[in-house]
Image (cartoon, rainbow, N blue to C red; front, side, top):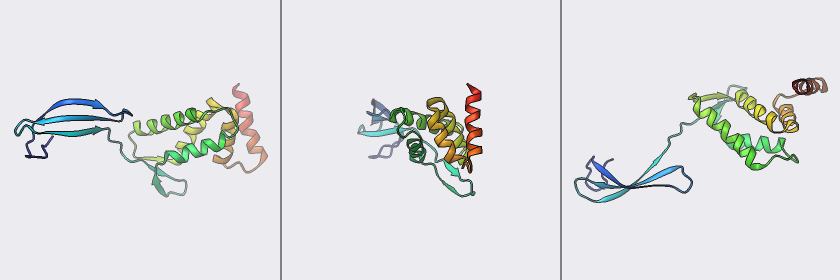
Length: 151
């Protein structure tokens, strides 16, 4: 790390502390040439994720869109906000770990539906009805029959 006072490249770490939320590390360093101390912060670099929509347009990944969709699907259901936020965290982590910088919105929707199916079947059906754009009662019934067949 380059010293901000003299420009020397060599320094030693005197003290390290985690931030309160655990997302960064604060390091106190001492320059080996001039002896002055300075602080650096170390954080995990997350690369931006681009979502490719059905119409081919692209936009930045927004975890709040997933959470809002889940909130609507889970309305008046016994699903806690913490559980929904955990699902969003899991999905975001899965996408980050895939190392793909672009992800299709359909893939995100499928991930949400898989998680909702495990959490609450009614919320799953609500989300699927909007996501899959059920146009009539028959397509809706087909999805319900799939759920019943899995039991």
